[in-house]
Amino acid sequence: MASMVPITAIAMMLIAPVHVLAQTQDQQDRLNLVAKYVVTAPMCERLGMVLAPDLPARAEARLDAEMASWVIDSHLRERLKNEAVGRQGKMLGIDLGKTATEAKTDAQLRNLKAVLSGFGHTCMAASTDPIFQSLIVPPANYDLDKAAIYAADAVLEAGGLASWQTPQIQARGDLMMVAGACRSKIGATRSDALLDEYGHSDDPRVRGYYMKSFDAGLSDPTLISTLAGCKRAIASLLPKVR
Image 1 (cartoon, rainbow, N blue to C red):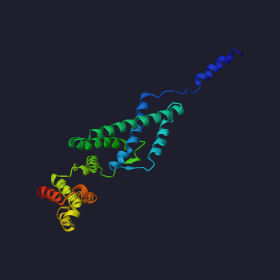
Image 2 (cartoon, rainbow, N blue to C red):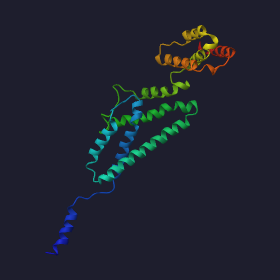
Image 3 (cartoon, one colour):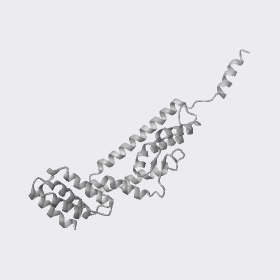
Image 4 (cartoon, one colour):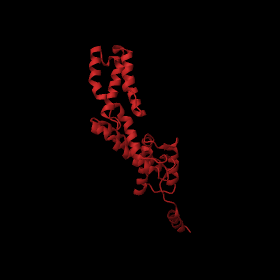
């Protein structure tokens, strides 16, 4: 009977579950993809998509359910998830940092729309993924191209580079800033007259831009220090706004 012990022990080892200590390539790819969707989610919201308020927790719970069938040690599973999220987050940070660093010319700034479109395609793919299909939801009749333009415009507006900012609109924005900054020098009547004549638009984006420009000038009266300087600035801008 003693000779049976080793044989029994070996048999038990053969039928016992094996705890695999490494993931397959497909599993690693899946973790990377899920992590990419998680870290990109805030960009999806900026592009007009609706996010579940508890998206990270719900995504992790669904990922855990998906990973339940993976033959991987539970501690290793947690480590792999954290590493994937950290890696994808770092990659996103590098991409955003590179975009910001290179945004020095008008052409580079206008490339922002293409960058946002790239994020948008990731978001659209996420919205059809089994884990994220109810966590990242595009609105009805969603148009990614229009959403990317809108999101880019929101960033570029301050520099006068939004898609809707024609040279005339930019010039009127500059005139509104001068009208605000020079109000104490040219008088309220002249300042209001410039605002009334050139600060109106049927487009709410344009109208808002004019008002922001006027308020920016109003908050910094030192922008142009003299009455003569104000008159020169107004005279140089009037031909461009008509």
